[in-house]
Length: 67
Image (tube, rainbow, N blue to C red; front, side):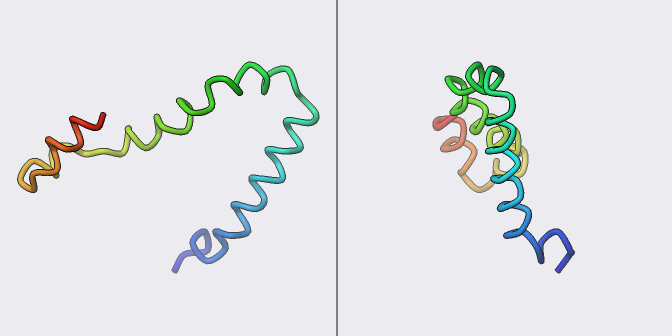
């Protein structure tokens, strides 16, 4: 297991603390981002889909339909 994977809980907790601090220190940019948060959270998941690897499994049509 890599160092990143071993301490993943620590990284997540650190990101939460940093996010809260940034939102407290710089509230205006976060008020602009807040209405778009759902889109910003979904886009990275959509980018990791490799349709080419799923063509033979039948999952490609399901993935395309959901997206």
